Length: 296
Image 1 (spheres, one colour):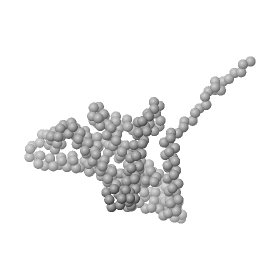
Image 2 (tube, rainbow, N blue to C red):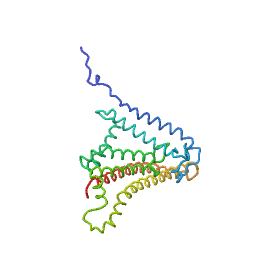
Image 3 (tube, helix red, strand yellow):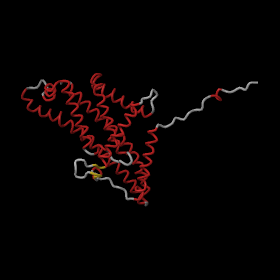
Image 4 (spheres, helix red, strand yellow):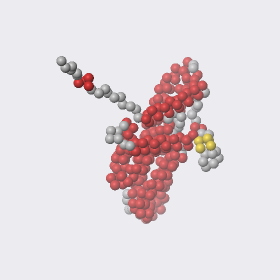
């Protein structure tokens, strides 16, 4: 008599999905940072956030144009990190994408379709989608540094980073306008709105010059800078309050539960602000490109 076997006896055992290499590397780095900072965190007096956080001491090159401090290191780390992530995803894309590939592709697709193509049209949108994606990922990487252990401050919370992105945007929309309309046509379209009496241009032209070539980069810089400064101070105060109350080990230590909850809430809020400010910066930059390539 033949031995019967159920279908389930021959079914392959379910395989547990292995984590990608970047996951384990990131986890190891995070654990190393926590281990390195845990002892000082519990033995030293809590650091109170202040404006001095935005002017850290120089690591090397003090007094020269190549002065290197913690914020400079944060910029290099985040710039390198975003390059590694994007290159790793673009180098070997898979038909069945991993979670990291899905996240990057979803963000890049949204920026391309809902920002570049929708606002600039199919032709110009494809032309500038790479630049617009660079702005979003670059600003987001600099913003998100504020919640990473060991960095603890957004690289865009000092004026240099927002100013560099604003200047790049300014050069881009001026170059796009000149390429589309020619030098004369671009500056005439920007500075001399049609349909006005000639004497009005004595008043309107200086205003248009300030609006197009001064106010735009300045507002891009200040909007990003001020939001990231305030985000760092709010986040720093909640962490400082929790650490201070726990350090005192008194009756007030019970209140650390409230500041601890606020700490996690503010961390989540800081992530939201980082995403929002990167999105706003990208949208405004796209609007400025659109205004420069269209005739008024």
